[in-house]
Image (tube, rainbow, N blue to C red):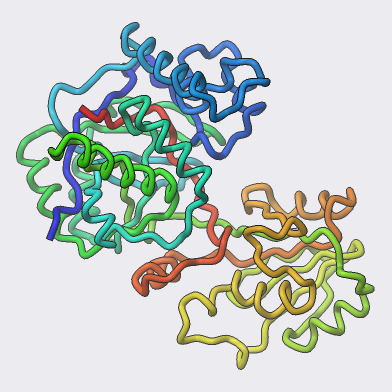
Length: 411
């Protein structure tokens, strides 16, 4: 059985430059948002993860010169000493905290062989265009620049070991997007490295929470380089941060639908009552338990609860709230067939709040909005264990890992 993870020699900012470098993940900001974020920030990692911001808008984001500019920007930060390379492989404790909430994990590199063997488990399909983009990004930079967010089943031995390694002043820390404090401790002591390695590799599995495109791209690059070079090296691993599952926070991922498919509000509610208990609400509905949904239509909120007999409890995918809404309402009543491709549906992360749902409906951008209860980590792991796939936009993890603090160089 291949090893699950191992330490690595990270490329990272100097401690005093971490705040200059830290950036949001490349895929949570648009090009225009990225351009605004790097104003007066020449060392922002967005110059590497979204290098199109340094070229005219007329240049295709998939043009060769885009990837070349990213590589040049990475070289510039290395040559200027903003980014430095650790002398020897290490593990890194990675903590995110805000407002009294914190989660503490371990950054390392995961085995591509373990990923291919489904010991590092996924639950989501990837889009070819996004995967191809990350393949070219990794190959051109000769580095993996953003960690895959992973979880492991909470293990008190490992939790205590990780927290013991986070004593003292962090190696680097910085405030990232949404005022989240990101702190990293380098763990290079041989005894601690050995204990972490032994404990982590004894885990049955890791679960990809966010970053499926990064992981899939790393696997492709690993195959291509093994075929090209005939030897294994650092390209056979990919950067990840693993947290205990009970410290991770999933927010709701809500739905907007452009039209009612010709149904009046009264007709729509009558049809919904065939599968759901329905009651009006004088306040926005933020579901506090599974199998319950909010509906905002015609300037009014409704609380919906799917009838218990309709929930297929032995199916880890069909029993998800996102599946119940899709299978019992969006598809049969509103004609939303494949939410991956149907242009009539849109998705809003719960971090934006229910006010954003109301605003979009009142503006006419959508006819109705649905609020959902957040998917639970136990559900995600059950789907992955069954080697099944979750519906699109099932989870919104918050906080998100930052780009730029740790990079895995493919020597």
